[in-house]
Amino acid sequence: MKRIALIGMPNAGKSTLFNRMSGASAKVANWPGVTVDLLSAKLLLAGEMAELVDLPGIYDLHGFSDDEQVVRHFLCNNSIDLIILVANATQVDRQLTLALQVKSLGLPAVLLLNMSDEAKKLGITIDNEKLGDELGYPTALLSAKYGQGYGEAYQLIEKELRQSQATPAISLEKDFAVDQELEDKLDQLVRHSVDVPVQTSHTLTEKIDKITLHPWLGLPLFFATMYMMFEAVYTIGAPLQDSVAWLLEGFRDLALVPLLSALPPLLNSFLLEGVFDGVATVASFVPVIVLFFLFMAIIEDSGYLSRAAFLMDSLMTRLGLDGRSFVMLLMGFGCNVPALMGTRTMRSRGLRLLTMLVIPFSLCSARLQVFVFMTTALFSPEHAPIVLFSLYLMTFITVIITALIFKGKFNSQEPFALELPPYRFPTGRQMVLRGWHEVRHFLRRATKFITIGVVLVWILTHMPFGVEPASAASWSGWIGEFMSPVLSPAGINPELTVALIFGFVAKEIVIGALAVIYGLEGSSLMQGIAQQIDWVQAYSFMLFTLLYTPCLATIATLRSESKSDWYSLLAVVWPLSLAWAISTAFYQAARFLGY
Ligand SMILES: Nc1nc2c(ncn2[C@@H]2O[C@H](COP(=O)(O)OP(=O)(O)OP(=O)(O)O)[C@@H](O)[C@H]2O)c(=O)[nH]1
Ligand SMILES: [Mg+2]
Figure 1 (cartoon, rainbow, N blue to C red):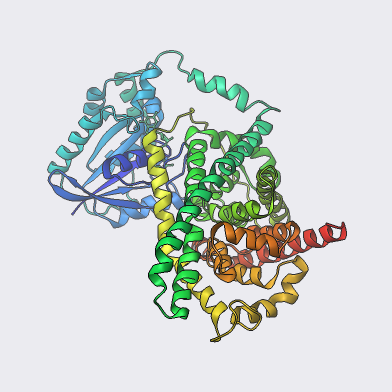
Figure 2 (figure 1 turned 60 degrees about the vertical axis):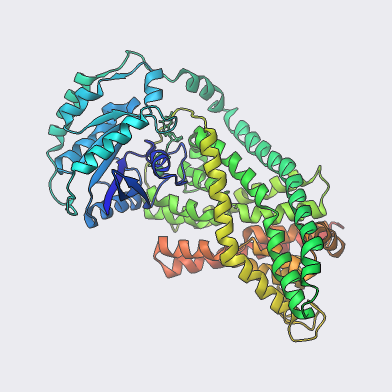
């Protein structure tokens, strides 16, 4: 099978093109360093199946950060039939160095000058035929996002692929042409075929930046935006969740209950109160999660992330972190795993380890489900969004505490230069892809962890045979009892304890587990819990859920990215201790104050 690789500088639009060509839903965002790992897809090109590989962005082939190593490693270990060089057409003068390096290695390639829509708006004209002739690579103008020039680019790729011979894996030790020589060549290329108006500026971007980057308005505006986003997720999401839960309840009562009634009671309870209640309770949150990711997509794809990095950089530096760490924390609101991997762009190991230590405090979408559930059950609709936002603030408080304590141990001097990309607006297509990606991600986790988790919880609550489910005599009762000296100071009762234990595997299981433990589902589960615990206990439980040891996938990623057992142990034990300390302090203080 022929192999094609996408190579280009960060944020040039490789993943956008990859998605367009293969129909995949690789993550796209207006931030350099989104793709940090190989991603491949198969597609029919020039009459045969080909493998298309999306790679992390690189500034040049000499780079040594972990994401750049991925590219080097790929080039050195795979034969490649064609390289698609993706360059940002508004920055040809800087982006062609890479093309020249690839050329000097003698690799077959086509050059696509992407973002031609932006170049056009800026009045930049590029004679792509001439540029291609001088460079020695077929060249086309393209807008991967909006589709202009896509047909031509596609034909070009097919034509080259038919002609090209696989080149064996290359050795990057090989000397490139001397850099000065490349520089001169680049100068000449640009002078002959690119016409840039004397003054180019993204005027709209500049206007917006006057407000968003305002010295004292910028940060409050940023936090207000985030608050509005969470408020919107809650106010739109909670009713959506409600309706899905209502539909699932209807399905249960009208179809499942009669259907399963002939089964022996224990099996009936296993299927209905174990598998169905558990999984359905978690599934009812899918709309909230999709909604949340659509908002995140707007923030990420607009370029506001880079502004956040800019605004927070000096504060973060005082904590031993930098603007990129802050952006990774925000990305962690979606899922901690890709955020942890996103730190690969950092060259300093100290900075990387410290950032990876704080990312798991980021309130990910799995935890969001638990909190939407708990706040809806125990707080009024006016208070719920504020409670939710306070948990997001808690993320930052614990990040600050952690960074201050550990910054001496993981220090770094890596300078961080930030380029602010122009504002871009996500297209409907990108939003649909993103939403779909999240639904699939959920289904994968559902089949992998959530079902197994709720089944295990059912077994624990119903064994040994004949006990009152989830009573003190059941296995789960024993576990809750056993752990109670540790968790009762935090106001966490035995039922919640069992849910927390399973939340260690994946945080979504927490609500699934509660459904199974209480033998209830949907709105009746919320009422059931509201009768059992008060808001102080609920908030303490949420604090614990937010902060304690991240899920298994996060731990596995921490281990594989750090390659250190000691570090991984620290990353498990520290959040667990902090979770206990903070929830206990909160609970005791609240009770002391008479709440
Ligand atoms: N205006 C415009 N924006 C584009 C185009 N192609 C991509 N973008 C935007 O550019 C940004 C970066 O796109 P990505 O596809 O994530 O870029 P990438 O090269 O994969 O970036 P890394 O993975 O970080 O190396 C996103 O905001 C895209 O929506 C285009 O043709 N025109
Ligand atoms: Mg990418």
